[in-house]
Amino acid sequence: MKVVTGETMQRMDRRSIEEFGIPGIDLMENAGQGCAAAIIERFGPAAGRMVLVVAGKGNNGGDGYVIARLLQQEGWEVQTVVLALREEIAGDAKVNLDRLDPETVMFSPPPAGLAPFAPHLERASVIVDALFGTGLKSEVQGSFAEAINLLNAAGKPVVAVDIPSGIDAGTGRTLGVAVKADVTVTFALAKLGHVLYPGAELCGDLRVVDIGIPLQVAADAEGYDFVDHGTACRLVRPRDRRAHKGSFGHCLVVAGSTGKTGAAAMAANSAVRAGSGLVTLAVPERLNAILEMKTTEAMTLPLPDGGAGRLVQDSAPALLEAIGGKSAVALGPGISWHLDTARLIRHLVTKIETPLVIDADGLNALSEDPAILQRKRSNCIVLTPHPGEMARLTGTSTAIIEADRIAAAREFAEQNGVYMILKGARTVIAAPDGRVAINGSGNPGMASGGMGDVLTGILASLLGQGYEPFDACRLGVFIHGHAADLVAADKGEIGMSAVDVQERLPWAFKTLTL
Ligand SMILES: NC(=O)C1=CN([C@@H]2O[C@H](COP(=O)(O)OP(=O)(O)OC[C@H]3O[C@@H](n4cnc5c(N)ncnc54)[C@H](O)[C@@H]3O)[C@@H](O)[C@H]2O)[C@H](O)CC1
Ligand SMILES: [K+]
Image 1 (cartoon, rainbow, N blue to C red):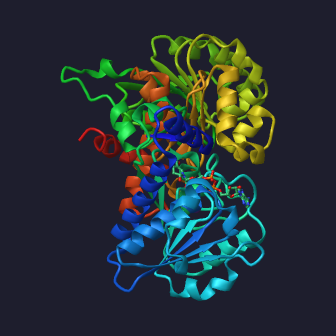
Image 2 (image 1 turned 180 degrees about the horizontal axis):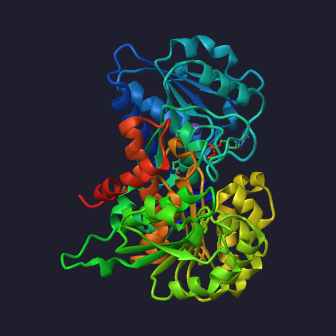
Image 3 (image 1 turned 135 degrees about the horizontal axis):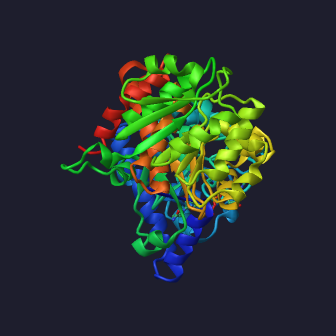
């Protein structure tokens, strides 16, 4: 599904009103109706229920007034606390404020804020957070922050209007303090703040309701592809009945060093589990016997290593020859960060013309000379860094990368003409042409060694099967997390291993093609 920024949503609002003549008051009424319906559906009949609406001075508050009126019509007792002066309320919000029974509305601007209404919080069955929406522009402070803390401490179900107050709609980051909602009802399209952490977690159940924004306006809006199950179903290619093993590519995994044979095995075995026709695992000859034991379907190719137990310059001729005839190459899992191994990797990047996935120590080798990517062949290159590897690649810090993951991934991809997969909770996928996708699958059980090796094998497999690179990246990242979600549903998140995920891949693919 498409997700947008708060600014884009506000532009969509204005375009709907100005170009399509849809009155803003109608959008607000529809927004309020969508929220009220979600509240009634979720929290059942009104009998004896009191809803407390906490409103800000803008249109988020305006939605809150519509909700208050509609729930009152449904028999709910409603109290509305406006954390602003009456004269501050304007436009569509004022129209809806004036429609409320004045007996049920209290104004409590800073510095008093919500504090005097603790008894209302106590009595409420449901609290509606209509304090801030996409208009939040800076850190929440003072009595507004206190109000959010009171809401969170009340121990009552909270329904956030549009977005939990305190969450930046464009990044998902908390601006000081934020509401922890049980349900969030947003309008027309989800925002980045709903799918990026911590916003994604603070939303609770996210509902996207139609409020009458014209389809053309939504279609024209610049957005990001949030890769969910539906998207993955459209990306996966069912098998042709006449298929044979040549139909699904032959990918080469270049990996392994003493002490890191598992990474090589997981990458190769994951390529098998992601559907490759053939897989060859090229490893230092000293480790070949071990990898013969750790793989079955994948073939191994011992490379001269001078007894070092890692790839060295002398490995290059045999390796370049092996790359010929392969449909994709994975370079890096467990390959080691020794200087001559790193030098070999940089040499290969400039020589390989096959679609190439570079991970782990392969990325660290690149970090010594990222400009090498400018000199690469015309082939597609996919980099799969975690934030620390990304910091090394860009010469910055993990904190800077995490502060704006989308910008970090997109800028590097565009500047270097590569596909960038910036791993983490909600992995970001960026293409050289500026397209960005955010992955919707996965769980904390994946925070363990080897998960990256599994992903690398999946990506090389899909590229080798002929998937267009951005499709391969989106599908590969999704299916990796989805397999982990299936494992978590089966046996929880603690103790989940990378091989658990590797072995669950066929089931994960099967859910896409039912
Ligand atoms: N298509 C849609 O998405 C629709 C959205 N609607 C609702 O409108 C809000 C956006 O309303 P807006 O008036 O732009 O701003 P907010 O209500 O979100 O903000 C309230 C108010 O707060 C002030 N403010 C900003 N930052 C701070 C801060 N750190 N501390 C204190 N005050 C702050 C700012 O001046 C704002 O005026 C959207 O979320 C939807 O809920 C439409 O109603 C329906 C269509
Ligand atoms: K809100």
